[in-house]
Image (tube, rainbow, N blue to C red; front, side):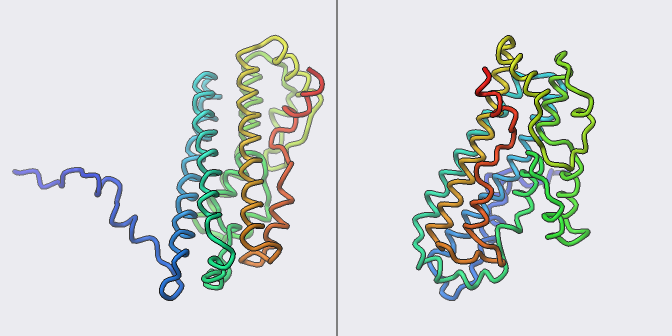
Length: 265
């Protein structure tokens, strides 16, 4: 019997027809810049999906004691973050008036409703039960966020890796409530100082985590400036305070211990 299975093509492998049907402007005309706005944010959601995929890989490799492959994966994550920052340059080609031409059509839609970005935040230690409440119970988003909320953070995985390397990480840190915020710890800082002074392999891994922390902060800063440039001090869509809220997320390191030790090396 002849094989009737369709040959794999560029179009059907990447689902091009379906992909191109997903950009559906709400404005009449439609307004020229709404298509750009939609595509940029859809691409961001795809990058968030990839970041989650890569972060899960990092956690797996830390558990498997493969630090060199961890560094390779972190390098990929850092490169993705640079691309995400660069995409803001494209969005900033849209003037405030061009955004206003379709902004009202967004109604209550807001970046607050990006569960994937919240998953990234949860995975990196910035957890909030209030963020969970923004998504309906039983929804894909709520279920995914709940799993991330109750799971170890990347920093927790790193501490377990250090314990496996023979460092005397206090049990209180290894068995902590992972739903609580990360805080600085003199005991962990002492371990990190020892690593920087006598363990080049793991000191390099620490530096990649600092790069990651800095990369996330750069993304946040550029996001704030883009919002300020586009809507100024106006309230954001969905009732948020817009740039004012985003500014509160700046200068909050993900891994405070890696910054605290800088003055003690």
